[in-house]
Image 1 (cartoon, one colour):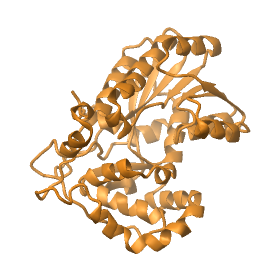
Image 2 (cartoon, rainbow, N blue to C red):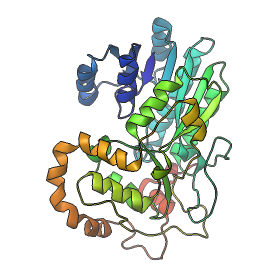
Image 3 (cartoon, helix red, strand yellow):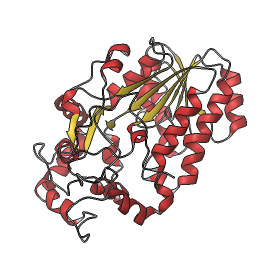
Image 4 (cartoon, helix red, strand yellow):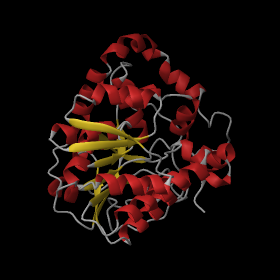
Length: 349
C-alpha cells in the first residue's frame, strides 16, 4: 500500500489507519524536520515505513512502484492554495506531472489508484443562487490554477488503464490548520465572501473515506466527501466555528463582505455537495459539526487556554485585517484580490 503525501495533515491519518488495519504501508513524502519527526513517531503503527521519493522525479517513481508493487495507491500529495498561487509552476509539476508519473508507473497493474480531488474543480459557485448540491455530474469550470490542476489530474486518471476512484473533498477541518496560520492564510480567509457556501468534514472522517476506498465497490466512480448536513455552512459560520475551536467563545457568525448575487464569477471555490453516494459506498458515519468541534478541541487542548484571552479582540482584529478594508464597493471580489497579490498565473487559464 502506498500513500502519497503520507506524512501530511490528512495523509498521516490515512497512513496510520491503514497500518493499524494490518496493511504494509509506504508513506511517500519529502524529508524535512517535520516529516522525519512524524515518521519516527508513527513507526510503531504496524508496518508503516517512509518512502522518501519526489513525485516530480519520474524514474524514481517508476522504480519505487516496480520494487514495491503496491496493491493500492492513495494519492494525496498536492500543492494547495495559497502556495499553488505563489508557485504555480511547482504546483503543476506536483499536482499534474506527479499524477501522470504515478499513472504511468501503475498502468497495466492490478493496483487501485484513489485520487484526492477537490471542490475547486467547479470554480465559483454563486452562493446567492439555488444551484443545488454539487455532485459527480456537475460540470467542472475551474476558476483558479489549483482547480485547473485537479481537472487535469482527474482526466489523466480517467484515461488510464487502471482501477481508479476519485474522491472530491470539501473543506477539511484539522488541528494543523491552526499551526498554519500566517499572513497568507489570513489573506485567503479574508477574501472569501461571508455568505459563500462551504461543506466541511472532520479530518478523521476524510481519512476513513480514503482508507475504505481502497477496497470498496467503487471502481470508476467519482464520489463527494464531506460531513453531514450540519457541515453545510456559510463562510462566516465556518470562521465562527474555527474561532470557537481555538477557545475564543461560542461559535457565531463573524461577518465580512457578502458575495455579489449578480456576478457568478466573484465567489470562492467552495460549495455544498451531495455526499449520499460516498456515505453509502464508503460506509461513512461522519461526525456532526458540534462533534467535530469537540474532537478538534481535544487535540488542541494545550493551546486553547493560551488563546482564550484574545477572544474578545479577535473579531475586531479580523475587521482591521480584512483585505477589503480599503477596497471600495459593497461586495467581495476574491479573484481580483488573488490576481492583484499573486499575478494572473494564479487563475485558471
